[in-house]
Length: 490
Ligand code: NAP
Image 1 (cartoon, helix red, strand yellow):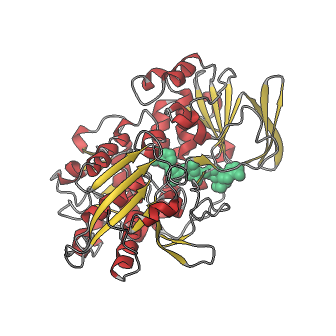
Image 2 (cartoon, rainbow, N blue to C red):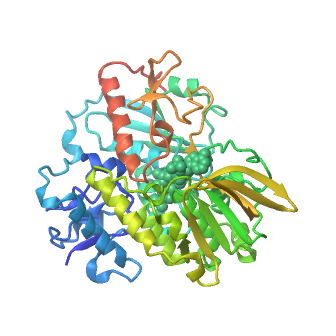
Image 3 (cartoon, rainbow, N blue to C red):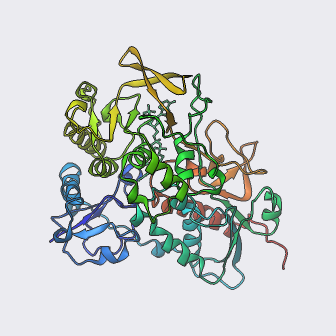
């Protein structure tokens, strides 16, 4: 009876070293890991020992006999992955336990004082990586500008994804270890300068994430009623910066621009039964707005074809089991451009196969629904008579849709910190392997970046674990090379 990984896999790969038969892939040291939508268990190799279940921080692994109807598609998905990329039995290297890489035990003199700015997933994984090193000891100050930790796990993950949010328990546990002090409500660059933080620590790691939506840059993008999906998400999750956001749900239609996982999240929140969100992280204001909402249709406009959809298949499965999702059959006809990479081909075929099972708009019940459109490039937004109109190019033909709210969901940009280099165009902190680069392109001693502010907003929660490992490797190497300045004794 094999085990199965389901929708809320966070890719942190805690399960991988626990598996005695190496049947969970891709592992973080395999090239496919960087673009993996989730991890998969090879049913032909799994021995049903259950070690992976205990290791998973988000309860994303189950036995095949305990699969609910909702989880059933994932049984096939796990098996199909190995059909597409080859059996796990043919892989020749088990994932190296990260602790085996540690070089030598630290002497008492080798105690590092590190500041980590940001208490979201990236900051957590930096803390955790430092705690697991044996070639240095670290005392760590975590600084968080909000009165709460969790970052986008708390304020970005959808309120109905309770299992995913459980990873916060792991985050909280690592901060209770001796040597870690968490400072809430402290803004670096305002309450404490970046220079002062560097003076009082050997190293500072900026893990400040990507909170804001990228600029749409279209005529009408600044009209009332055009709200970045990222802001809408932060609002319904109770982020204090967005408490006063005005969200008009009085019109029957909302248009979402871009079709990544954030787009699917907001579409699900706008169309699901609001009672699903009662008792979650969703604010009472947002819950009341959803209960009063007149929205019946969310249209998701994507520039490219279905084979290039930015959402992951697990999230489309999750959306389609919550609300009716429809697609225009004509939109789903896409010229084949088969990727050579087996994993990329698997994802493309899986996505197309799932989309082909969606009903056409006419066939869908007369109820709330989500409409997926492809080959549609927005060109302008206008306002008249209390409504908005999104003009777009539909496979070459100009057309438009009326709505009450437009949610651009076109990716996120990093948060800048006064006194820390920032690349406006990329929306990230310029860096090489986590070492922050100054204006002359040289690494600034003792200043590092981790997570989305380092590499941009890609991947899922656990992807940040391996990103953090790279930054901590650089930081510790610089320490042993004598490149970090010791802070004055307290
Ligand atoms: P994303 O995955 O990068 O998707 C951005 C979308 O915006 C794409 O469809 C892109 O399409 C489109 N786009 C970009 N510029 C545009 C423009 N100027 N006009 C119209 N469309 C434009 O971004 P995201 O949804 O914000 O997600 C960010 C990251 O968070 C991703 O790694 C995602 O997987 C992750 N996330 C995961 C979950 C989950 O696992 N449950 C939930 C939320 C977010 P083109 O192909 O045309 O560029």
